[in-house]
Image 1 (cartoon, helix red, strand yellow):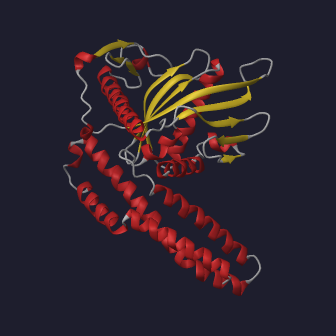
Image 2 (cartoon, helix red, strand yellow):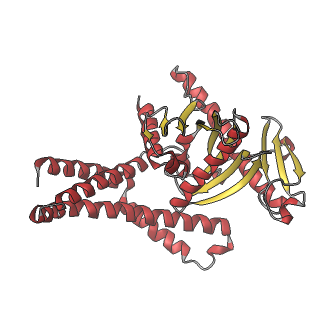
Image 3 (tube, helix red, strand yellow):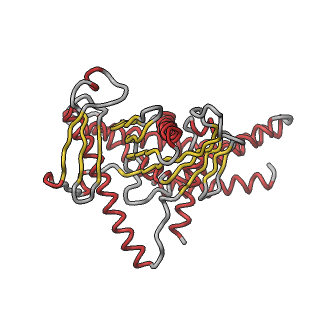
Length: 367
């Protein structure tokens, strides 16, 4: 085996050992045993929310263990692979090099997971997308972004629950709110917060002119009972109205949609995707609590920034550009990470952007 290959494998071993230590593989196995014991309890499904939480945590922990054990096995097999490749000659060495490069990428991706150590990083994510400047193109762009995140979640086997979709008149959406239900999706998707810009030939312009559109992405952690976000009922105005947009008859013909207005902050939340008014009110209250938690966090962050003497972060700024014309490129403006395949990105292939964003954030926190 070549010295440079041996040195690279030693470096990969150091990185993977660090990942195993941070994940605490023995504790992960103990946690899986505990969750399997809870999942086997015949009374578990008496409380559906708790049962879903247990099964989701179990599935995630099992996948995490399989992933790290699989990486260790692949790394342990690499010297044997190179030994066999050198005996065979021909393309075998190139195949071993390709497997080593793939292993390096997979270990780097696993390493990124260990960087999610923020207070709320392990929570489910609540994503809110709003169309910005650009008229009908912006509404269409907001819907494209919603599809991108849902496709990403589906590729990873994560559950998605859509709370509200406000459709635009001609095409696309004005806004949408949905939850991505899997551990650490908040920590992972929080780097997507900001303004996303699309440049393309407008399909809505009969002269085929180029159009620039904007959409805003907000990512919040789903609120848990331990957060102590109490909402005084007297501070909330509840309005009910008829749902709009695609849906079954029972959705569109009853006053089931709910709008909550939090009077002290002016925050407005709507939910219309459930059939019953009560279900919509419960979902809307979840979203309102998440937004109030974010207000609280921003106030605390502003106090910390004032104490540190810096200007705070500029998360609300333009953070990614998607260009479909005159060339093909998606580029993150913070990390400089870019790819030349926008169609794959818009189909949910965004892990490279998420990983580079998490590393970028980690560097910022260390400086």
